[in-house]
Image (cartoon, rainbow, N blue to C red; front, side, top):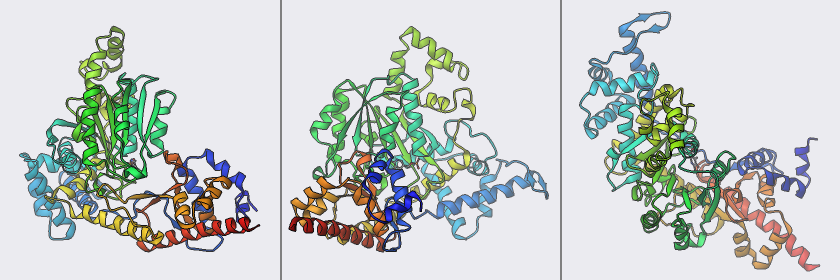
Length: 542
Ligand SMILES: *Cc1c(COP(=O)(O)O)cnc(C)c1O
């Protein structure tokens, strides 16, 4: 019998508390393993995974068509049956592509999105645009310019305009750096805030909590050594920040504010009224750097990015991972306004002789005039230890894949039917789950329904009263519930305390299971609550 197997006899509290040390992602993975051999022999329902169980199809098909066309194009210049071709020629490539595209689903889609891009972005040189897509899909050249391919940047500007900025028009005023997913974007941002002396060790960063656990960990890394203060939102405020919490951001000692909007795990976008508060905040604290991760933006109909209300102070991160079911592709972006606080701080720092010399030494190997280098371009260079700046760009196939996802949205003037569908899919699961628990679901437009937090203590209180809930808190490790849920019922949820939530909260992802599974998950949660209650009742009788 392995150590793991002990758990099937009875819940061993020491083993549960050992798990306290691990991150909640690791704990959920271990619980999922336990769940495979659950006592009841139930089919496992893993509600712990944030990875969506859907994919966007048409953009992928279009990408495959570009690739196929690209090979034919390359064979026009040189062909050897042993499997070699030349490179793609730009001259006349748009026309050749249009002739090659027939009436299959993927061909029609590709033609539609290319025409949509040409008209929406007012592209004059159609050959240059199609060449970038085809050559990019083939991955035949180092991505150039290194930060972002020329037309890709225009497409992504448009996409962020539609999806994140909404009614605040500024597509032309932003720079974009495509990265290996949103998580790499965050790594590059924190690294650059440090290298560019925008943040110093000891500086205070306020984090909007609960938050994706790694985001509590990055700023604390020893090389950054930032002081983290959290502002924790509450259920009774629909997980919105309070006036008092906004007041805290006005303190000039607060150098940065870090948020996920809409949040993970609490799954709420800032309301328009709360969002407007950021205008007051930056008025009072004009040097504040705001970092916002908007990966779940499209899932809430009332979402708008903090970037839209405070563009000069905000660094925006977006990722294609969730909406398009593309976590394996690693597709994210950093977006910054042409006029931003980081560039201003860099220029102020250059008044200092020592910093100016450092700057000279650091970047003069890659650019003739280092002091003029923008924060976002420094980020690109530093992502590749400066010396490899010229090869720092995200792979061109990844950039072209992003083009296809973004254009699949832009081709429709209003709300994309695909985005609408993604909302419906998670909403249906969300309702199944909460109705299964016998609790009225939250219908506010801020709610993404991509995740949901269940307060187990509250559920206990509602079902069997205050005393029982207190008894549970006094007698069990807080991980006991999720542990038994896995080992006895084969149902996995993620403990949310590591996200910074109060004890008793568990996160259920609505992204990864079929609708009917959420009914089962709710049933297992209720049955387990009732089992604890039976023990409590017996004890009380004695
Ligand atoms: C899932 C998730 C992402 C996606 O990260 P990628 O690196 O783009 O896959 C980003 N931020 C948050 C908060 C997430 O939950």
